[in-house]
Length: 87
Image (cartoon, rainbow, N blue to C red; front, side, top):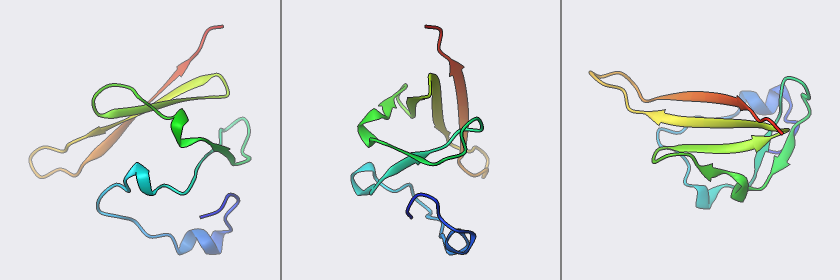
């Protein structure tokens, strides 16, 4: 989906059971609460942050997402972390 998708376009999005492999990504975009404009980031900017996590620095803030397997029939979940970088 292109940057700045309309509510009608978003309503047509579909979820996948399995994550989309990085080799199939067309684009990676982000926005922050401080700047709600969607901006492109190169997929190569996403770095491993442990064996099952990815991280990226956006506007001087490091963000990390880690996949966690659910136990006892619970679904897979994701834990997100935010770290302020000190110059």
